Amino acid sequence: MKPLLDVETSPSIARRGLMLVISSPSGAGKSTIARTLLDLDPKFSLSISVTTRKRRPSEIDGVHYHFITVEEFERLRSTDALLEWAEVHGNLYGTPRASAEKAMREGRDMLFDIDWQGARQLQEQAKTDIVSIFILPPSMEELAQRLTRRAEDSKETIAMRLKNACVEIERWRDYEYVVINDDLDRAFSAVLSIVSAERLRRDRRPGLFDFTARLLEEANREAGNEA
Image (cartoon, rainbow, N blue to C red; front, side):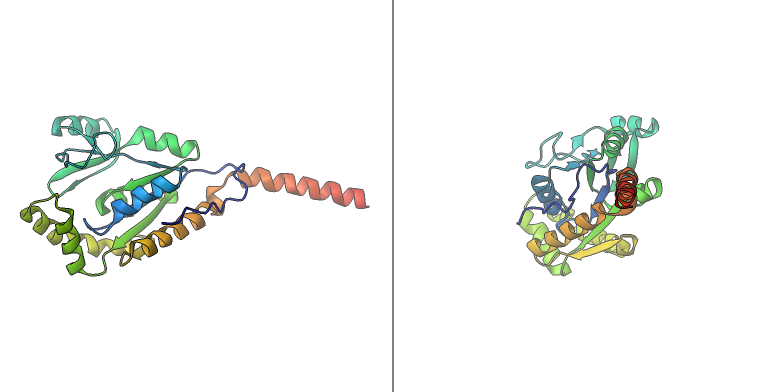
C-alpha cells in the first residue's frame, strides 16, 4: 500500500485532533485498514478498547485490546471511565475516556475500530470531532469466505457473525462515508482521501484564526508602505 501523503502544508497551524471511527461487519476489513493506517501515519493513535472477550491466539493484550473481566468492565462503566461501550456477539467492549480526551487536546488523531453501537455513542458525545466510515464487503459470500479463511473462530461463531452482519449492515446510513472493500488497496486509498480532506476542515484548525490575523497585519503594513 502506498504511504500516506501529508496534505497539511502548514503543520505549525494548531489543529484539534479528530476521532476517526471505522466500523464494519466482522470480516469486512476494518481492522486491516485500521492497522495499515496506523503503520503509515504517525499522527494517528489507536484507541485501544477494553473487552471481556477471550483473547485470540494472534492477539496481544494491550496492543489489540485490553482483556479484562466482566467485573472490571462493570467498574469502569459505573465510574464513567468509558467514552462509549457496547455488547457485541455476547461480549462487552468499551473505550477508555482519559486517553482519547488527552489526544484530542494535544492535536493528535484517534482511531476507533468499533461497531455501530459504539460509533453512535461517540457521535452523540462528540459529534463535531467524529469522522465516521463504514466498510462494506462486496458480497455476503465473500464475507463468509473471509471469516472462514481467518481460521480463528468456530463454525458456530462464524454463523453468529454472519447473522449479526445483517443487523450491522442496516446501520450504514448512520455514517458519513461508506467504502466498499472489494479491493483492499482501493478501499484503503479511499480512506486516505477522507482523512486528508477532513484534516483540512476549517473548524478543526483553530490556529487559522491567529494565522489569518497575522496575514491581515502584514497586508495592512504592506499597504501602508506602498502608500
